[in-house]
Each structure stands twice: as C-alpha cells, then as structure tokens.
Length: 110
Image 1 (cartoon, rainbow, N blue to C red):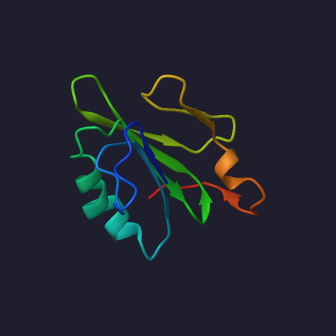
Image 2 (image 1 turned 90 degrees about the horizontal axis):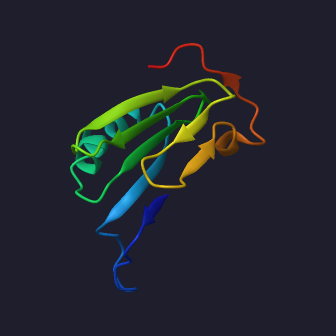
C-alpha cells in the first residue's frame, strides 16, 4: 500500500512521491523486502515512513524519516503498541493489520 500527497496522472502505474509505503513480508520475499526494496524506498525524497509487516507472526518494522533526512528503525511486537509515523495524525493500532488472523505473537524478530 502506498500513501501519497500528490497523485500522478491517471495513466501512470507508479506514484512518484509516496510519503508512506506499507508492505507485507513473507519468507520468500524477505531478502528483497529487507534489502534491495528497502534501500530504494529509503532513497525516495518524499518518503516519510516505510513499514514492513510480518506475515507469519505479529511483528512490524517502521523506518521513520527524521527531520535530518536520516531513517530510524523501530520494531513493534507488543499488541498494546500504537505504531507511530512522522506524518501528522498518522497512527495505526498494532493489531489492526492482523485482525481476524490466527497468528502467534512474535518471539524473535529476524
């Protein structure tokens, strides 16, 4: 999922200026999601946060952009957590993406 503030023309497939990118990781996509894709995403000037949701257990990684332009990683594994993003008013309850799924809590985040 991508959140943008400024949409590209309708005929274009990709958005040039995302502010938030959310992805679900699986074991088969982990290497690319945590490596190549993350590196590319964090180089986008407009990006303020990149979120990686684990598919097999409840764990979320959020890369938030500081005002200096440096991204910091926060790992959430507690159901009581509220995920915070650098965009004003952007919050997500930890369990919302996992609603209705029968998953074990995270015991070890890779």
